[in-house]
Every structure is written in structure tokens, then in C-alpha cells.
Image (cartoon, rainbow, N blue to C red; front, side):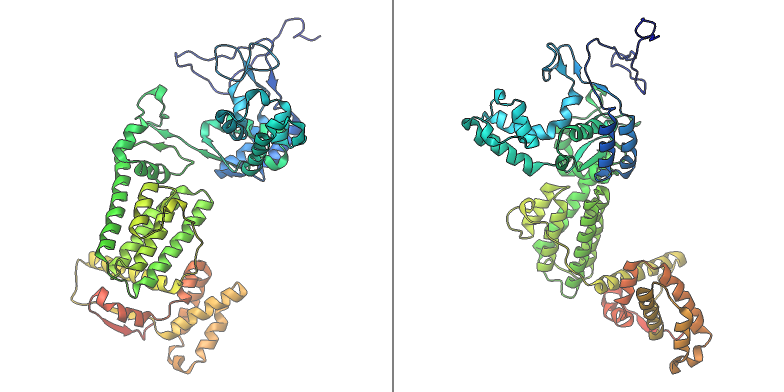
Length: 510
């Protein structure tokens, strides 16, 4: 006996988590007679949607792993409502409107149409089922429509083919189990396969102290126009992008936003001061070009992977330090510096567009940086970067020694490695590059046969064995740096005017 038919049981719906109304009472779901549902539980639709997630670019990775399970769990959803609501009238039942989450998930497609409705070119009464079948699904022929409609309908069809599929849909984490599953399944159910969405990007919240989401209904939210007037648009944009990763809640803190404001002013004042002072960079120009090319490459990689915090750190901190080092080493505000600033402005553009335009103009850029081509990474000299990184490390070591001993010292003697050690290191690195492994025994034998090393029979095996372990642990970037830097002693001699007076001696010790 069917217990439901005889009135002993009735189906009901419940939330997966407790929901509290703004009035403070617990929310319950009312089951309405004659309610219409969208069958998201359909096995074929679910299977096709899950399969498509494998081809999509979904961030963060954690949500890409979660989404198939969400889709399989997703059940039928009510799609119409009654009452005094704004919305689209449901065509199959008078007095009902379509529930927003049901129709809004195809809004990217309707944006393409709404432009022509708002301009008056497309009349509402023209938008029948035949119209949408042609524009979205490519069904029928343009000749099927009255002649006076064909021009605008053909333009809309071309626009749809141009803009679709949607590259990425951005939304807050609250939409992970509400909006995004419906967005994906509606597209899969209705649109041709080529028009299914390509990506989803989930961001977390900006919260108040205590972790509560900032919202007007909760109070405590500083109005955006007032915050902009106080901190500036660029400062707030950089704050949102750099203070935390997109997959983390960000606590709104005024003092931190002020720090970003100060950082941008520091950059602006540095560039303005150096360019107005003129001068040339000389030998350091090669370093600056290489440093900016490396940062530009890192920036593009981060942006390609939507690693906004990493990209912002590269632009506003590492690149800033590179320019400071260039100036400290005697660089000036000549063409190399201006060229670097123009590249810097291009990297800033997505984060702080106003500062980017200001620097672009200062550095002699043509037109607007926002309309310029991003450009491609150029080959750069890793050797010049290796030498400068070596010098930075050397100065840091000297500084640590002075702090540890509490002595300034009248002089500092630097001992450089003899040529045979560099030769052994290079031999091992080449061996790893060619064979994927090293053979320290073979290298030791080769070096012990060298006449000039006959008196170092105990030292050579020890040094080469240690170098072999280092080479196998070495990152590719470090390996390239060592391969491009053999002139240690000569470089230090040329750097004496910068580092201070000193005496250099090649070590004959291990």
C-alpha cells in the first residue's frame, strides 16, 4: 500500500544546515502545491556535467576536486515562486515567476541579447522560442525571420559566436553548492557542447574582525565610495589582491590598507625622483634589463595560474627591490631605467591602473598603458643576475658576521675558490644534464690525474663527493646560475668601489 496516497506520510524538504531568518527565527521550507521543479537529478545530465568539469579550468584546485561530488549530490530544485517579486513571468502557470537562481545562471548568454533590447533595436515581442533557438543553438535559417528583423538577429548571432563560451565565472564561496552547479548544469542541458563554460573562479570573503562576512545587513561595512575617497582605488585593489590568497577570507583592516597606500606612494616618488634626476646606468643597465625580464616571466606565469597574490608580490615588492639595487649600484634615470619602468607599468596595470598610467607617462610611454600590448618575455642573461645575487649574498654574510661579533673590523679578506673547484662543479653539472645523474668516482679519478692536483689527493675526493651531492639537490635555476658565473675573483675586483676597500686572495685551501 502506498502510504503517501492514503495520507499517512507526506514528503518534506529540509536544509543541509540550519538557516536563521533576519528576524531571528529558524527558517523552514514550505511545500507549495503545483510547484515546478528542474530535474537536476537526471542521470544523463549529471554524467555529462561531471565529465565536463575535467575539461574546465576551476580555481581553487580544491573546488575542482569537490565539484563532481556536488553535482552528483545535486537534486531537483524548485524553479518558480509566487508573491510580490521582481522576475520573469513563468509561461506555463499564470501568477508565478521564475525563481532567480534558475534563470540567472544563463545570464552571460542574455547579456549579449540585452544590449539590443535596451537600445531599442530588438523588440521584446520578437524574442520567441524560434529567436532563441537560432541565436543560441544555431537552429533554422536567418531567412525564416521577417526581413526587418534579420539584420539585428544576425548581429546578435555573430556576437554570441564571438563571446561564447564563457571563459570564467567568478563568485563567492557561498555559491559553491548553490549557483555554480546550476550555472554549469543549465549550460550543459541547453547549450551546444562548444558553448559550455570553460572556467569557474571561487573567491572567499572580505570579513570584519572576528571572521564575520562584511554585509550591509550585518552592519559595520564601510561604504565603498568613502573608503575609496580615503585610501584611493589603487590601494584598495592592491590590498584585496595581495593581503591574502583568493581561497582565504580577508579581514578588513584599515591600517593594512594604509600600508599599501604608502607602498604605492613610495614607488611613485622613487620613479619621479630618478627620472627627474636623469643620468645613465652604464654597466648596470644589463642587470636591470635581465632583472625585469625575469620578473616579467614570473609575473606572467603567476597570472596564467590566477595566483594573484604571487603576481602582486613580484610586481610591488621584488621588482621594487631590483630597481633599488640597480640605483644602489650606480644606475641612473636614463633610457634603460625608463624602459624598465614601462615594463613595470604593464605589470601593474591589472592591479593599480591609475599608478600604472602615471608611471607609463613619466617613462615616455605612448598613449595609454591600458591599451598597449603586454608583450612577451625576452631572453635574458642569467649570468649577470647570478653575479649580482652573489654580491648581495656576500654583503649579507659580511653584515651577519659583523653583527655576530660586534666588530666592524678594519679590513675584510675574501677568499675565492680556486679554478679546479669551479671546473669540478661544472663537470658534475654537465654530467647531470646529459645523463640525469652524476658519477663522482669518475670525476675524482679524472681530477687526481691532473698534475697540478697531485698534492691534494686527500682533498679532491672530499670536495668532489660533497659537490656531487649538492648538484643532485640543485634546482635548475641554481644550476644555470653556477654555469654562467666563473669569473668570481674578477667580478669582486671590479666591485671593490661599491663594496669598499679590500684585499682579494685566491684560496689554495680546501
